[in-house]
Amino acid sequence: MENYSIYADYHTHTVYSDGVNTIAENVEQAILRGLKEIAISDHGMGHKHHGIKRELLLEIREEIDGLNERYKGIIKVFLGVEANIISLDGDIDVTDEDREYFDIVMMGFHRYVKYNKDGSYKHFMISSNFKKKDPYVIEKTTDAFIKAIHKNKIDIITHPGDPRPVNIERLATECVRTGTSLEINCKHMNLDVITIEELAKKGTTFVVGTDAHKKDDVGNFERAYRLLDEANIPMTSVLNAEWK
Image 1 (cartoon, rainbow, N blue to C red):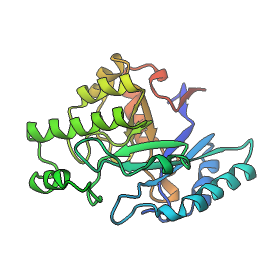
Image 2: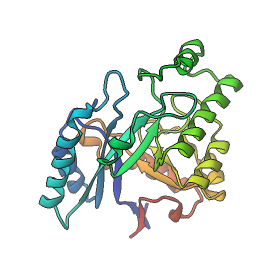
Image 3: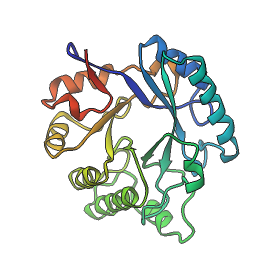
């Protein structure tokens, strides 16, 4: 931590999904933390309980554009989204039309999403224990992730392996091919030192995110710093890290 710092938090939630603070409050906290960039990345529209309302996308986009004008030269604000996988074929709940609003598209595995119409994904979710470490479940989940990053332009996979286990080595290999980064999530902390070291050797890139649901957590990377200080990897592997 003495030689580098994390300058951006790309995983923050607001009142538009299941966060407790406004976009402006998250941005102001990021400024207080000394960040150079922040993304507002609420849950995708397919989340049953906390998804962004599609009809509000223009309003959110305009608010972020206004904050970029207000804080020009101080911080850069991006509009992101934490999309959801909605089928075993790698479909996600962000359409091509939706993408016009977003600067960053992240994707995670979540419960309580609106599944595709054929019902196969819903059946898979219901019939297999959510955290079950059955090899079949792990490989089917990994297949869905891999199909999703090949079918869609995904910048970051959020909290990979949590809450549903994946074959992280196989997923990381495909992430390198598609230019997708894996998140080191300060809330879930699902990647350990050994895994990070092994994946970095294979060219995997990482992005540290707080997964903040309240403003006080925006830019609080302490848990990730402790992990990275133990890991023997080049900081060039962490896309939102910079040398001091």
